[in-house]
Length: 231
Picture (tube, rainbow, N blue to C red):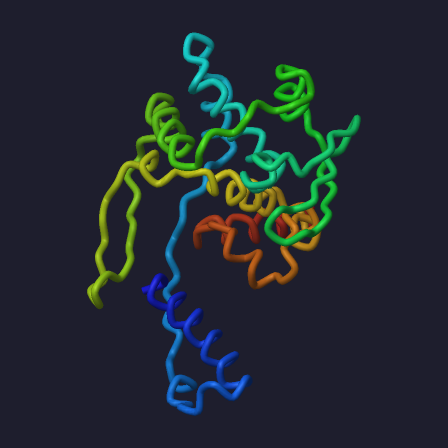
């Protein structure tokens, strides 16, 4: 459904431009409805990231390098395009990043975990391999460390809503890192506006798509805040 919706949006963009130029006179396209549905994406919580970080991959350089880059992204919120394009400057305590996708300039604090990874590679991350290979190796890493709980994937194909049961490692990809950073920061009660300054999101609507918090987690978060306030 979301793929179809994106195609319709693109088509309307072209037809609006053609209409403005006087090339198109058929305005039926303005009635085209952009369809979309919310798809639940996975993130990795702190304990899962710790399992990945602490697993000994020293005998497999291929997986060790992918693991380190993924963990680095999970604690900086950086897109893989930015790491790949080397659009960042590493200072003593901060990373200055010009985002490849948006051109936004963001300032990211270097945490203990990210500092250890940078030190391991002499203050410069290894070259990032292709997205397809990275995703394949990342899934392999998550499977090896035991991120195998059953999760559900629901989406509409051909007008029919399908629900599949998969092991969690099968749903992990490069973008999981950025989603994990946003969600874990949110659960730590860091204000959304502060997290957005790091991720570079301009609107809260776009940012909230990254937050993969369940109903139970929202309830527990609100409960803990009120309990701390009363104490």
